[in-house]
Image 1 (cartoon, rainbow, N blue to C red):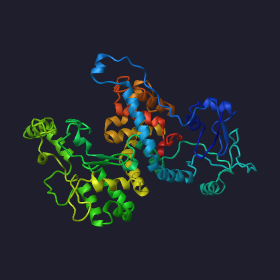
Image 2 (spheres, helix red, strand yellow; image 1 turned 120 degrees about the vertical axis):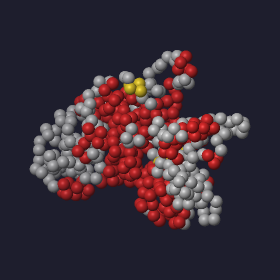
Image 3 (spheres, rainbow, N blue to C red; image 1 turned 45 degrees about the vertical axis):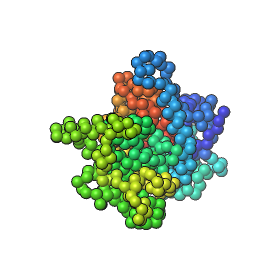
Image 4 (cartoon, rainbow, N blue to C red; image 1 turned 45 degrees about the horizontal axis):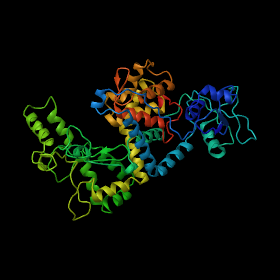
Length: 489
């Protein structure tokens, strides 16, 4: 039997979920007459608790492999192997996270008790016991000002009872950053906040290469994708991140990215935001957007033959030199993806190789820069999904994290961000959601969907199955929070 000491903001539901036991079993084991009232410091016995270090990752149902599956290279084990690889990467990368996570947890511990004017926060009769147990009968007390509550919590935490009824935890900036940190475990590699994707979309997977094959491989340079959320150079998010880093700690930014030279550090920011100043404005700012315009159905018919020619050259190797027949001068590079000299007098280089690469790796270990990554991710990918989350009464940290993960993968305006809503309808879960347990049930259904499978008639992309599994595993233990108050979204 495991014993658990109640911490600030915990409820009977969150504790039960953390140990993978039912609320009913937890209430029964501890003879709780009113499960809405538990006190900080109170000790609860956990019935038949599983090892909390063992993530609850559901395994896909066995599937008979058909010849069609084999022709497509289908493998039920592949997704599990990928998930395990990501978890191993997290364990390797956790050293990059430790100090920042300590800061986040410290902030969380020092936040005031969250309540609304409708909820009375009341003191119990002083007890000589160090950990007083909350009254079981739910009796009320006289009101107490929030400032007094803050002082009590700060000065006598663990000596006075912590009695709060929640409409839902306030979704503070710190809570949002914690959810994004959980999402980051789905995206980062072993370098954590310094994770680098070195123009792998351009590299592709033809001609013996091991990059990322997309429709514009060997044609468009996306450039550096960096950090826990993979902020991209060509599209502009990397520039936004660098601006945020510079604003947060300009001295450290110049030291890390400029080698002490402010001119070089400033040129890096300028190039990745508004484009290299020495490149003609006739060159498109974003190479990918330019390529999309060539391929668009709305594009001029004069553009389409040129786009088709580039595509054909990118997939052929008639001269047998081991690379595509597209000449270097015809590759598409936006103004943001231009070489920069890392040292004065040195030749310009791409920022994902050599000295530049090392600088970005070094920046991943700077706490201020890590916070900048989380803050920008909250602003760009998490906050935009909250109106829809509020509309459908999405209140659990797990479900909000899944929506944020889809926003990172597909963009905050993509219909795929609301995959949880579509999946809920397929398994006959009421929306707007009635309770957080229903939200978790839907995420588990997505995690069980299997590689390129479905929930009902809704196709679930492989990456979303993997993300659902990783978020359920909750490596950082940031998603076992009480349900949130949608009025704070």
